[in-house]
Image 1: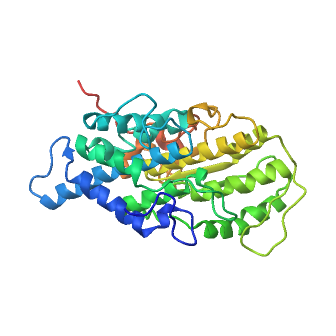
Image 2 (image 1 turned 30 degrees about the horizontal axis):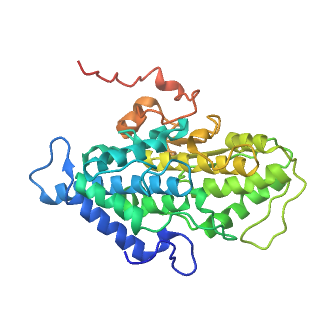
Image 3 (image 1 turned 90 degrees about the vertical axis):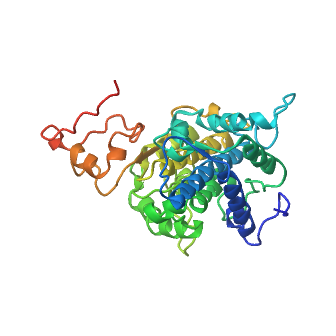
Length: 371
């Protein structure tokens, strides 16, 4: 990639909108995939299937490096991929360990612990690229790859909102696009829908202590992040401005201190997605963005660190089939979604979640434990 780190396609600050960056990412996938060693048995009868699996493993490693670099570019974690810590020299043989350390740094908050979980991110654990390929990837991030941060631009989501890592998951996961219809919503479309829904709701329910909304197909959290912006203004100033339609602002709401505003947002903004990794990314983004707003309000130190965001800043973003969960028994749900019914942290942090009443009548079969 010959473009400089700060080059952007005209009209958008987001590198995920740059086709040259797409091509560079695909080259990285191809380079990594050519060196991947798969774990466990493979379908030796199908060269195509094995190649596809190698590409999925490579894309998983590359995507999580994108998330790690986004976090480094916003000083949420100590730099490991953009630059080595002072006084430490990285050699090529240790490159996979450096990537692993960068990935692990993303899990330092209770709500982000799932990003590396094998049942949330199975392709990350299905194989590994060679040390040489990992070393080349780190060098690419350190020298040629564009910044995943951009200056705030009026009307466009700030880079700290994680808009780019939401978009990059779609770009690097054709399987998610095909299987789960992971197609990211442009910010102006999200704003238009919120102007037509959340904005009038604030007027109608202005005396309610919490405005509640749920995104039943939350994806990586684009709608949730924009809703946080609307509600932060509403709870802290008593005003909610429209962003995309010509209608007057809603005024006269009750104002609250920033900490209380964040708690009300967490109490009222819910999401659910059927894909575990997608939901885990949404949890990371909403956690960081609320931490950013609290830091702007002077309640958290700058630079904002992921590990310093209080544990109570934990968004309610569940993993599941929003058309079925809560409507059928656990046993029925398990027959339809065996990979989700026992997923750790699927309802995190909804510790009081229960299945429908017929659970007792038709309990799910006990999972056999390895001897």
